[in-house]
Length: 568
Figure (cartoon, rainbow, N blue to C red):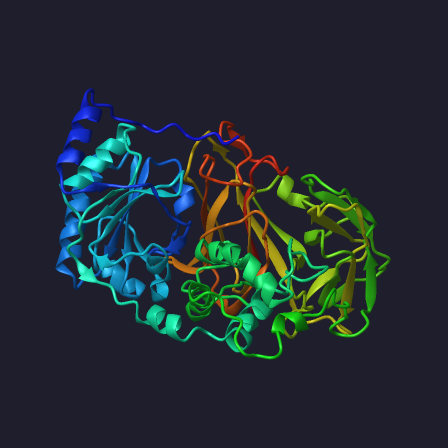
């Protein structure tokens, strides 16, 4: 059962009947409810917006916007007025239908967020016909209250929504600037080729998990399988649920992040729009994906093999984290230059985190008691291609003599009871490297009220010596919403270096920065984010509960991890 946060409603006696008379007397039409699909986009400031995550609002108003269109500009001015009246219960957004840059979108100075729609894919999916068109969504039912122009009927519909008297979709005429969907028209005539254009996208981005014996819940092993799952593919592409671990690439990039380009998304969606033709290719690339591929040590046999204890995964049920420790036999310091995980059974092992800890410490070490602490983090396993992690030249992670490994396992069930025997291959440096890799945990304590949709958290750490920042990782639990990392040199403004706009508790990779950052002594790293403890968060166990900081999965935590070395 879903528990929603109560809305603040303004009730006007008698308005139900008067609104109905106005609707019948106007040129608007009242038709069957128009359904829509979920979608998600980033706005001009890099913030994430997903239609289905606005269920704490009575409605979402979306204006198709083109700064060169007078009807759209006039519509924006009228929506600004309506926003002043209805801002407590209704969300107002603009949809850029021109593929403008973020800096251009910001220059428009609209009073509500502007969503960027690369190649107009969301506009196409919503059948938006003109700049100046307005759609009013019911975010709980994924349907439309209104589609039309910015006119008197729009305001009347919004009031009907507030009064609980809106049901079927109201449509009015649209006076705006037509949107040209030339690419869509072209691809309906000449669809992307399945064998050479569509299937390779699935092979490179999806089949690494979605193959027989893989972590994905179903395999893409043929044209027929992709055809059958194409509605799901469309949904998760448009709402950014897949590929997982996406980031805001305008803030910073990482090879550990996954994202389809706008062109790849367009090929997939337009191929489906054209009827998903099989084409003439004799070979089906999806049939060439290995079934249960054999694991290989990418760097050859490890110098030392860590055998984790056996974990028995039941057939069904949500699994709590498992914490295990592995004693190490080293009587002198060892330096790890690379490592690779060998998952016992990738069907159930979702992720694994490994810290190097002192004999008297557990997995959390000093994080139990300190808001910030320096730690030795080996690395993480996540489903996918699972390559070896090779640390930068002349760097390494030190295992002090007598220390041990502390492991956190996250398992998912797949209908069978499975034994997991995961191994970790360690590769050592012959001589101590010049730089020791450390990971700084930066956290905050807090309490989140029930129903809070945007509980903001901010913390920071100042380095007192020069460092090179190499990687970041965000850690929250089910209510985590977004997190970003910014750097601020003494006397300067903050600058975002990495952003995860749509945090997902199920995916917690260690993001190695494509461009490491040299930070001078005195530089402060800011970690900022938010939690969503409302019913709009589909991962929230119970939006009625107050939630406090803690280390268990039913608690919440806010920790940014910074991997670096001292750069003297």
